[in-house]
Image (cartoon, rainbow over the protein chains, first blue to last red):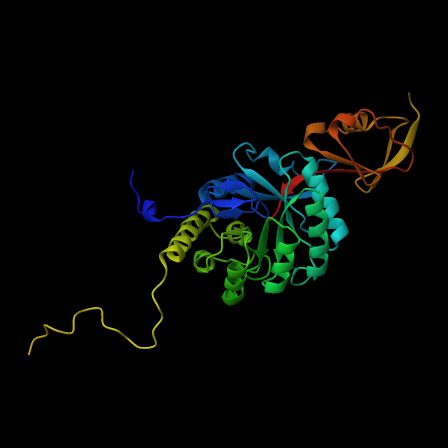
Length: 265
Length: 70
């Protein structure tokens, strides 16, 4: 079936030599139940899904691991180091995640502040350097600071993941200028992570030219997560297509769309 | 073999058979070794080696897996 999407000439979305179909990545946390999570992931079209590393519940009072519900042969599991406040902890979690045996990618988070969950960029850089040396493909969650992004690229990360706004806040893209700047200056993929609240946020974010978006709460905390996942899929595609299409220049005054001539006396 | 020693598994003290291997510990906990990653005194023990490493009193063992997260 011919679709309008075929007129969009895009480059493949590749991270560290691995190409992905979807520019939307989704998390697996905070869903009200597992079937909703599974359906939302499917509706989002995402191929990359994030997971966290935690202790097994020995008394079985909590539910089984997330892999019980996900088809790891169809999805690309991206482990995170969420909850880590030091480089040492993040490195430890990353190594445990890799040992699970799926891949050597890690979404590196080193959190610096409990209230905002903003990254500790010093710890992040330190952990990134160690993990890159250790063979990891590091996707580094960071703030929208160009210099930190450049340092991360120098450290050899596979992708830089600036935030749109704080994790779980749903405040949308607060600093489009900085995200655009980061994208313009970096060679590695730029994937905006955290803060997207609804479809327009995702669309505006993709219109900045970034390579992709990662979101979790925007889906999990929507009234209808599966429907929102569908909306996000469309929004990411629309925003990407609009970026590639190149928007018209902004004007301060009106310009008529209809001919000025041919008017009646 | 009734003699047990105390180790710490996921932060909780737990009695295990003296000289039990990590693989035996997982069995006692009814955990599938393919579904967990084992850290023994801060060192990751790869799956093929789980049957070779024996626990000693006071050992710290962490058993982790993937859960939902962003």
